[in-house]
Amino acid sequence: MLLAWKSARVITYAGYILGFPNDTVDTIVHDIEIIKKELPVDLLEFFFLTPLPGSEDHQKLVKAGAALDPDMNNYDLNHATAEHPRMSREDWQRAYRLAWKTYYTDDHMETVLRRLTVTRGRPGNAVLLLTWFKGCIDFEGVHPLEGGALRFKFRRDRRPGFATLPAWRFYPMYLAETFAKLGRWLGLYLRLRLKWERIKRDPRRFEYTDLAVTPLKDDESETRDLFLETRTA
Image 1: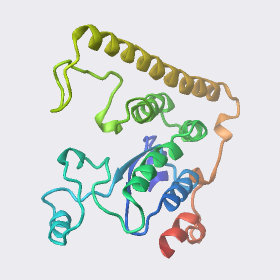
Image 2: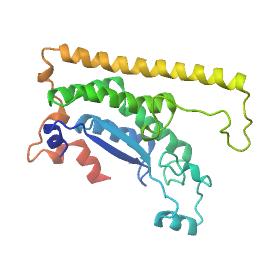
Image 3: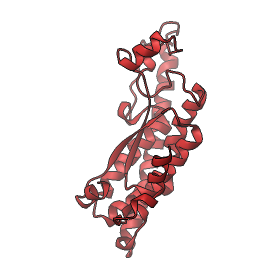
């Protein structure tokens, strides 16, 4: 299916839920490495398996007396809000951070650009999207669907219990933080753009191949690690 989208020059984008009963930190990282190797997914985003308030899963846990996060702000799919049978809440949070770090490495982002090039996709668009996804996690510490290149902050917007900073302190801090982050955003974009420019100048760029962009033979899918992991899970 993903190769069919590739043949239509589409940038592929998928979600990955972390925290199913058999998941551990090691299995999550292991499975992401398999995805990087075997599936032509360009953008991958991660979420916690979350019992959303009002859902049947949440109601069952409440009735069972499960330990749930009392802060409704954390039920955004980006925080561990329930207990997990094989991971502590701290390990689950660590798995989430590792998932992003494992997928969005410099080497793999270059691989994504090479795959898009050989399949006649749009690597220039992917440079912007990869910058957005990696930058939101690395620089802002928020999910890409909740972030952007510029964070707005207002001096009087404070949670209960937090003092309002004086203007002479708030605005210099805000400006310094903003310019520092913009510099990091620009550096990330230029780094990826240079990768793309180098790929464009490679006379053998259309000869690139790897397992993910190689069409499956009829009898091959059962031998792929991804299918073996799924079958034995």
